[in-house]
Amino acid sequence: YGIALGNELSTEFVPFVEVEQDETTSRGYSLKKPSKALQRDLEEYRARRTSTLNRFRKGRAVEQTTCDGDVSNGLRFLGWFKDHRDASEDDGPIPLTLRAVFSHARLGAWVEQYLEFLERRGLQWSSKANYTTGLLNLLEFAIADDGFVLTEERGQSVREQVLNLRRQCDANATIQKMYRRRHKVFFFS
Image 1: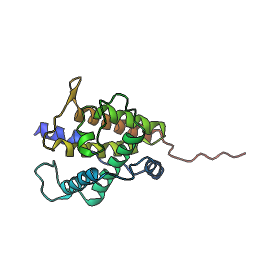
Image 2 (image 1 turned 90 degrees about the horizontal axis):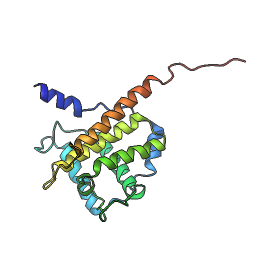
Image 3 (image 1 turned 180 degrees about the vertical axis):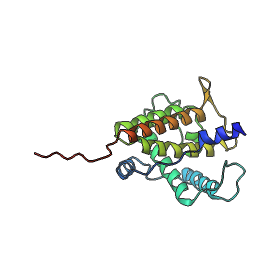
Image 4 (image 1 turned 180 degrees about the horizontal axis):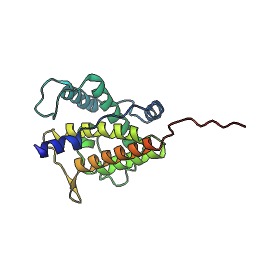
């Protein structure tokens, strides 16, 4: 029971309240026109996440709004992936689909680069935490795909790497919230 509880506590995250400015900023780099292959992946993802029963999904079905949020997070990431990522280390073109990108051995490094991209744009840690949770959910979709091989780098699977990044975002969001001003300061002259 302890192992099961530990797994649940390490992979289930309570979402932070959305920051409207971050949501507005992030729409600028979101992928606008998904390919037909990506649309098929997204439809299958939605079906898997919202169906009452699915043997390839951990946990219960989610509401449509949660699923839509994951899809939005995926489209943000894929927009960054397509237009803002340094692709010089790629062996060749990587299809812009959930299966190709989220099944890739370099996904952990890409998520880290994406979070650095968001940091340079001044997004709150709470937003980065929420976005990373969506990416984790999409990764779970990829892991359940036929032929998926969970790769490792330095003894950690891609899933563990992205979980580490999500935990770090959560910790930074907690610290950021602690140091936020609690009262307005008025200056009188």
